[in-house]
Image 1: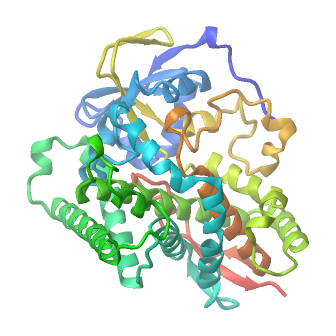
Image 2: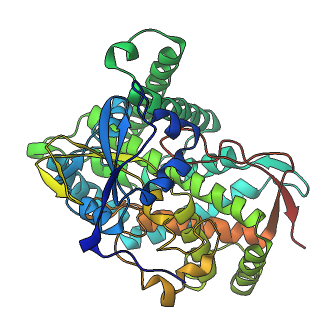
Length: 452
C-alpha cells in the first residue's frame, strides 16, 4: 500500500555532508550512486550537493520534481550532465533547450502516433523471436548485451526503416558504452583537461567519431534509397523539415537519430535486463507472470492485441522502472531567479534530477527496496501524488517514446516468460554500471531453463 507525501507547505531544504574540496560529492556518486541519491530525501526536500566545485540542487519531493518537470521554460535543459551529453548527442530532442524543443517535438511526434506504434509491433515480435531463437536449455547468457542488440535492431527497423547488420550493432553498442561510462567523470573534469590526449580522452573521442560516422552512413544510405517507408528518418529527410522551411542538415538529423538510438536501444535493454534480474530472484513474481502469459498466450509469442490482458506483466515492468529507472541522472538550469523549498536560486543554478530520490521514498512506497508489482494495482497507484513516479519524465518533455517503449518491453518480457525461466548464476554480484548515463547492469549472467 502506498503512503502519503508530506504537505507542500512543509517543504524543507538541506545541505548534503561529506563534500570534498576538489570533487564535491563525486566520490559518493561514483562509489554508490543510487544509495547516495536515495539518502538525500532524509536531509530535505531540496538538497544542495557539489559537483566538483559547483553547487547543484537535488529535488527529493514529488511536488518540487513535478514543478521542475512541467515548467521547462524556467527549468531548462542544461547543467553539467546535459552539457556533456551534447558533446556527442548534439542538439537532439532529449538535449535541446526550451527554445528549440517545441518545434522538434512537433516534427517527430507523427512517428509515434498510436496507429504507427501498432504497426511497429510486428517488427518487435519478429526481433523477439530472433533474440531467443538460439537460446538453449541450461545455457548461461550475459543478458544486457543480448537485449541491447534486440532493442537496437528493433528501433532501427521500426523508427528508421533501416536494417543494420551485427557489426554495426556492435560498433554502436561499444561507442555508447565508452561515451556513457566516461561522461560523468568528464562532467567533473575542467575543459582544459578534457582536451589533453590521455588514453581515456582518446578512447572517448574515438567512440564519438565511430558513433557519428555510423549514423551518417545510415542517413546517406537512406537518402540513396529515396523511399518513404515510414518512421522518423523519412520525416526528417523531407523538405520543409527544418527552420524557415529548409531541409535539415545531416548534422541536425544525426542529432535526432542518436537521441532515438539512445532512447530505443540502451534504456529499453536496461529496463528488460533489470526486470529479468528481479524475476530471477523473486520466484513468486515469476510464477504469477508465467501463469498470466500461459493463460493469455497459450504458448505462442505475444502480439499487440494481447497488451490489454498482460496486466501483471505491465506491473512488473513499472515496478522495475521504479527501482531501476534507466534515465537515472539528468540536469537542468534555472533561466530566472526562483524559490524552491525556501531557497532563492539565481539564474544559471544547476538542478540535478533523479527519479531515485522520489521513487524510493519510504513515505510514498513502504518498504521501498522490495520488488512488489502489486504497488501498481489501480486502487493503490491512484493515491500517488504527481511527481512520485517519473521514470519517463513529465510535462511537455515527457519521453516521446514512452508508449512505444512499454509496448516493446511488455511484448518481449511476456514472450520470454512463456518459454523460459531464468535463474541467477551463483557467486556473481549484480550492480549498476557505474556512472553511465543509462542505469544498466554492469554484468548480469543468467541461466536459461526451457519451460516444458
